[in-house]
Structure formats: C-alpha cells, structure tokens
Image 1: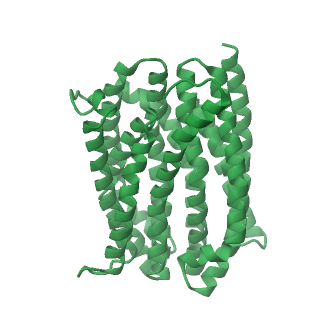
Image 2: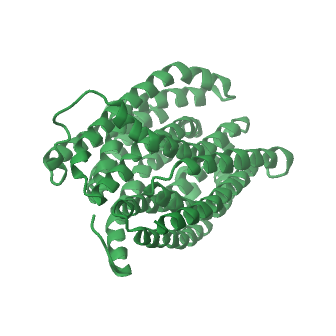
Image 3: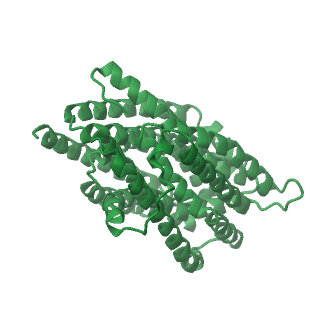
Length: 449
C-alpha cells in the first residue's frame, strides 16, 4: 500500500488490489458453483440436497467470515498509521480466535443438524444428502477459517495477488476432487452431493497449508514472524477484533441468511422448484462476487487512507468503487437476460427445472442492481470501521422489510415461489439506500476533522 495523489494513480492502485481479489472471489465461489453444477448432473435429489445444505452453511460461514475479515481494516489502518510492530501479535491472536470459533461451530452443528433437518418438510433422499454433505464439509472447517484469517492479513498489506495464487491452485483441485467423489472414479464409490462436501473439505486443507507456508517463507509476510513467539489467548486482542468483526459478521449474516431462509421456505414446494431456485441463486451469487470484490478492495484502500488521516482521498476511492458497481450491474443484467436458458442448462437437463430456472433468473436481474451498489457501500463503511449502524440497517432492510414482504407476495398473490424473490429485491434496495445516506453522514463528519 502507498499514498496516491491523482485519480490516475488511484485507479492504478485500486486495479492492482481489486483484480486479484476479483479472481480470488470468483474462483472461491466457483468451488460452490461446481459443487452445485456437478451435483445436479448426478441427479435432481442430489442438487436439492446440496441446495439445502448450502442454505444452512453459507449464512453461518459468511457471517463468521465477516468476523475474520475485521482483521483487514485493522491491519490496513495500522499500516496507514505506521504501526507495523503491532501487526504480528494481532494476527496471531486472530488465528487463535479463528480456531476457537471453528471448534464452537463444529460442536453446535453436531447437536443441531439433525433437529433442524427433521423439522423441514424434505424428501428422505434430499435430507440424507443435505446432512452428510454438511458433515463432510465440516471436516475442513478449521483450515477454512485459518485460511480466511491469513488471507485477510495478506490482503490488508496490499498483497492480494498471493491469495489469488492460492485459490487458482485450489480450484482445479476442487473440480478434480468433485469428479472423483461425486461420480465415483478411481475405484471409489459414487457419493453424489455428499462427495461435493468431501471435495471442498479436502481443498480447504490444501489451501490452508499453502497459505501457512507462504506466510512463513515468503516476503513481506515472513518479516512479521507470525508463527513465532506464541502467547496465550488475549481477551483484549480478541475483543478488538470481535468489536469490529461481530457487527460485520452479523450484517453479512443478515444479508446471506435471507437467501437461505427463502430456500428453506421453498421446501414446501416440489423438488423441481427447490432445484431451480438453487440453480438461479447460485449463478446470480456467482456474479455477485464482482461487487463483493469491489467492496473488499474498498475496505483496504479506505482503511489505509483513514489510518493516514487522508479523508478526502478515502472519499474519492469510495465513489470510484460505487461507480464501478453501477457499471457492473448493467453488464451482469445483460448477461442474465441474454443467456438465461444457457445458464439454466449448466445445472440440469430436466425441462421443467430449466423453465423454472429461467423464470427465477429474470428476478435476479433486478436484485443484483441493488447488490452492485450496496456491496461497495458496505466495503467503504468497513474501511472507516463503521459497523454498528450497518448492522442495524441490515437487520431492518433484510429481515423486517425483505423477508416479510416476500412471504406476503408468495402466499397472498399469484407470484407463488417467485414472490420471495420480489421480497429480496425490496430488502436489498432498502439496504442500499440507507447505507448510502449513512456513508454521506460519515464522510461529512470526517471531513470536518
């Protein structure tokens, strides 16, 4: 990271940080994408089972990952304020915290998984796939959280190409493992959707191992000696990360969990509808990795500028990111509108599922516009370490506006299952609008300092 003066310099630095993040995020989500696509080719029940399992896991993972992502603005502001000596212990304590959180999640999941699935109105085969997909995935939960913590450290130093390098190694391995475990190759039994969970877990272990090796051996990470001089867990360090990370995590959780809640509510519909919904949301979420990457890059550059007390420069970066988000929204909308049936056939050849998927994709065109603006706004606010108001806004817009309105549309109009997607559009739009006004107020405050 370094200070910039002109718009051209800012665009260059932002691109250097953003492009590797974008490739990393697309590649990481591609793992879930290939899990879903390859499971769908193993059967509709396999696709529906992975859909239910993902709907339970993704909100938990993204919410907790929000806690781990708090390390990024913390370290970025330390770099901007020339406080590099504080970084090693901060990262070490973050690693201990990530492991502790992973253990807690595994224990809670062990006791709650069966009761949750039993209460859902699922076909027996779908419930079986969902359960053991999650159990297989859980084998890799500790290395997954460790990798994401180390990735936040790398990215905060502006070295986003390193995490890109790791994921570009992991993605083809994940596809290979999917092929082996889902379809039963090289003498192994065909596990269907359950094999997708096992493939992901194995990939998490490899990714984490590579990340640890790089932090130990490769400069500039090695100069921080992260894996030396371990101390006992420190509640003060944990509190600093949790104070920022928990609101970040819950804000992300409220957004992602609304999609999960919709999928779970769709369990009252037939398997074809669940599969079509999952296929459409899976591809739309794949496109969402673009504005999400812009948000992550904004957190780094805004955090650096705020740490350096260059508040006008932080503002310029913010509007640069929002503008990119709007441009991307039009591009993604065109892709979804033009290639809806092509996208649907990536997931299944079932004519009924293809037809339903194209209908869901039509609604995705509209809610991704709100996402393309809302995500960069959240990223900029995290750079300021402004997370509490964002949490409240996320709760209201998604769970008080979005989900209830979706339920009304689904149950009291002719929209049926598509009504839930109408609710998502309302919720995401409300969130983007409120976040924009919060950002304006925050920028005015800092510019007066």
